[in-house]
Length: 316
Image 1: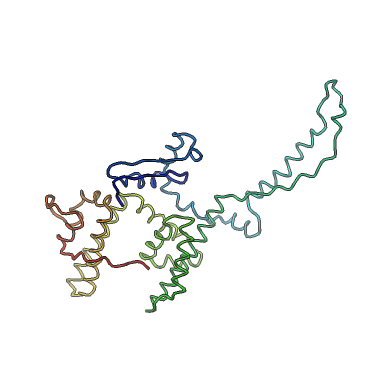
Image 2: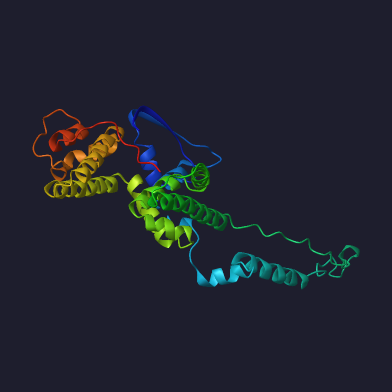
């Protein structure tokens, strides 16, 4: 949404894409806040908020590394193995110099008598937080996909999701959002476009789902990508509606036109996208009416003869 004045709290997890969205919500003014415990200097703040991570979505999840998977299925993790080797080597190196501290006269003094070595306390290996987060995101993606796939299956058979299935979807959404903000929203947008992705991810094959999720995230966070996608979908729906009308399929025609009406109405809630599309009116089928004074959504509806009624709920 757009507001008169915005306050943004910078956090270490932000990047250029999230920062752009946060810092472009205001009309009149904006205040940026940050904590010294997170950013020791303004240079560190600038580097964090301007870093480019548009392609890192796949790395947010476990990668399919055959060697690593083979090892970890047998209880061997690479980081722990390195730490184990280091624990074995370092004490041996230290032991070579034990008791060799010279006294002032060059001979061992009473304090230099070698004492029996005490058994080194067992060191606890700290789990790699990045690896733990990737696993949590992968598990959350699979659980959410199973919940969505179950509901899709019921709907394909003409049924309605049970209260238990709805609760599981809501819980899966919460878990997913906790480890990946907007994750469930972006994933469901991808699954609605291609339900087969949900079925694959539910079965543990997550690679294609992650790529689709990455694309949806980029479209949501990159205004230009969203504008391209809006124009592409609008043109496709317009062409489809014309074919349906010529074929006399009025039921499908009305459904397609209703979807176009939802798109036009959605611009009321997205001034940023509306502004980007203002220079692409011809691609949207609007010719030359630049002085009409209407907002773009109303102009689309007027030009294409679409009724802007109440938007239909498209959620699961």
